[in-house]
Length: 208
Ligand SMILES: Cc1cc2nc3c(=O)[nH]c(=O)nc-3n(C[C@H](O)[C@H](O)[C@H](O)COP(=O)(O)O)c2cc1C
Image (cartoon, rainbow, N blue to C red; front, side, top):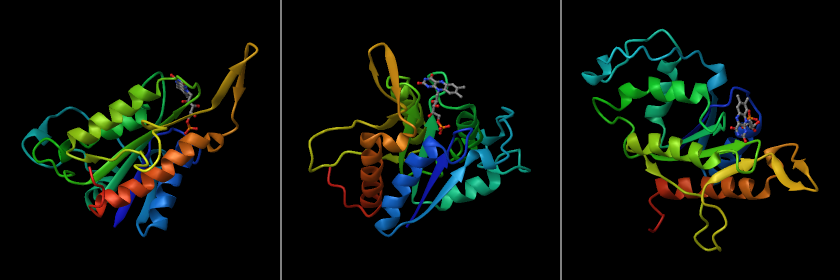
């Protein structure tokens, strides 16, 4: 079982990577083989909107790193997307990645049946995380990917999505910041649960 995570942050190994790695570590502890892919390490050109992918499952652009990325996507059983909030939206790199994967979707839904999920984090507690999760989940659903949530079925509801923040509180007129999303206990717990749930979903063990 292979689970990959794609980090859309323009900064490698920072908060979004921490969340994705926590999902992968839990999945690995349950037997999955895992890989974290940083979009910042990949040269992915913009979609040129040639629309050739309407008639064939292939992209016109084939001289960049989308080829290796596509191979990882097509061979994975689970795909976790991560993006920090940039202006209430996914990052430009994440959006570019989505655009360039259109050929895996238009002619034939080539990623259909895989398991998938999204994680995000932002500076502020209410910094736009919900919309960013919706954007990534909309993308995953469009690809025919089965969405997995971070609910612990045997515990009281605590999280509706994996979203962290650096703002811990606002007290006496001042922001109280976390040094890293790693200090956001709820977000980290949700990541670990998500790792478990993805593995269970792939094994067909989640009972709806
Ligand atoms: C261009 C840009 C736009 C941002 N927009 C928002 C925003 O709309 N809301 C918010 O709460 N934080 C915003 N942030 C803060 C990031 O979401 C936050 O620093 C996040 O932890 C970065 O993730 P990373 O550490 O994985 O790079 C923005 C940061 C950048 C660079």
